[in-house]
Length: 378
Image (tube, rainbow, N blue to C red):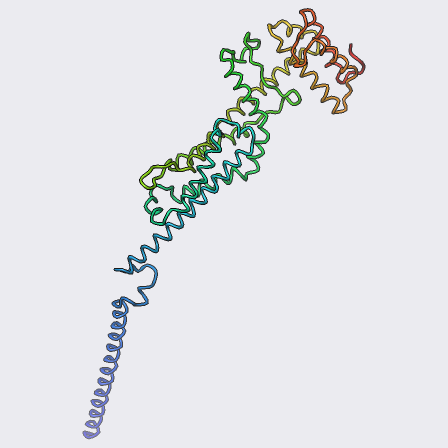
């Protein structure tokens, strides 16, 4: 029994010693493996030519860092150059688009059109020929990328938006009417406002007798005004001048944006005036046509000028023409109109005597009343 116990204890101690030795060897291997891995990592970070250094986000030092900065600056300079050239190209497209409308081309805002086009061409060449270093040195004076992008997008919208082009096309006549009124006021400054219904110094409105109810809507005028406001904002955001060779020179895209803003301001003002004329013409037409229905129209003849007789002649002529075009019978209306025209000159101005004013009125009234009548109204 004693021998068996001794042998058993001896085996246990031997097994314990073997296990302890295995653990020691295993732990030693793990520690060595860990230290080796750490050593490789440290070597990788310490090496100036490591692969990690070439990854994005690690800032090199010394000559390599300087080279990298120069490469970045060159790329940024060329990107700015490309953006500026695109801005010049779009500015040229915008001013050419505006000049395509005769009325806009003749406006005061476009009076220096040819000179500006030449400066635009010269400015574009200047940007193309500037060195990258020159562009970098002037980068703070040039507009930023956001301003350039916003300007280009607005210009492209003006040139390509079908709704805006439709508004401009439809309001050309009203803008022209507004320009005529402006020229009349410039020629004779003592004219009274048309607010008084028979002002002694009356300003005749420019009326579309064939379609007196057609004048710009509030939406049309709002679109023109909105474009003008946007252009003013863009012009304010662009620099007015840049520096080159210690010389301050104008930044032409700023001038183009300012011209375009002025064009839309002036155009909207002319349309406003033409629209006011059209609305006034419609009111006068309603008044005259109401009086043409019966003898209550005689008070029209008591005014001091011939505006109402001339307006009546043109309105009746347009009404007869519209009725004929619409297959509405006019009976002997055209004959009465020709008899009335005998009292007017080639410019539709009354040139008869006092009693003939009454005759002219009666002929015009009969011509109007023949529209849709069952028989000839004498």
